[in-house]
Amino acid sequence: MNKRERWLVFLIGSCHTMVHFYEQIFPALLLTMVLYFQIDIATAGWMQTLLALAFGLGALPAGFIADRIGSKRIIMAYLIGAGLSCIMIAVAQSVAALAVGLAAMGAFISLYHPA
Image (cartoon, rainbow, N blue to C red; front, side, top):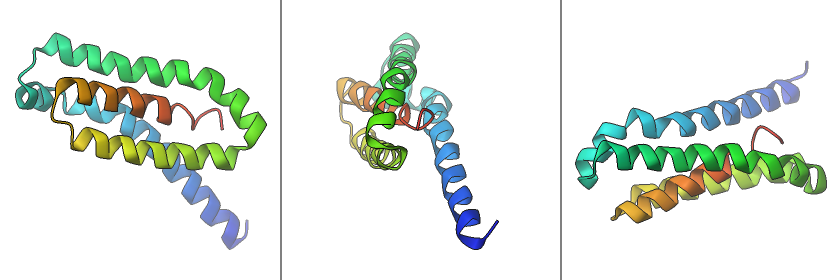
């Protein structure tokens, strides 16, 4: 394996690590979000469910799209979309904005595995 191939494996491996980081960050911060937004644990659980549903259901068409436009473009869309979703979550001032940000994050991270 040459230097370029090693670098590519490192980058793609890092992208894969980030998918699972994004997927698990909200459950890790669930109690903090409950206190910050003053919501009950069930509401926070439903928001996590939105992320998980978007992650699972978004992967279904992502494979088809990756076959049509290419894996490289799909991975770039994942990286940009997940980053923007993180910003949206970070600046969320309401529960609705947080829920939309989490659902968007789930949809964007679902793009990686099929690609």
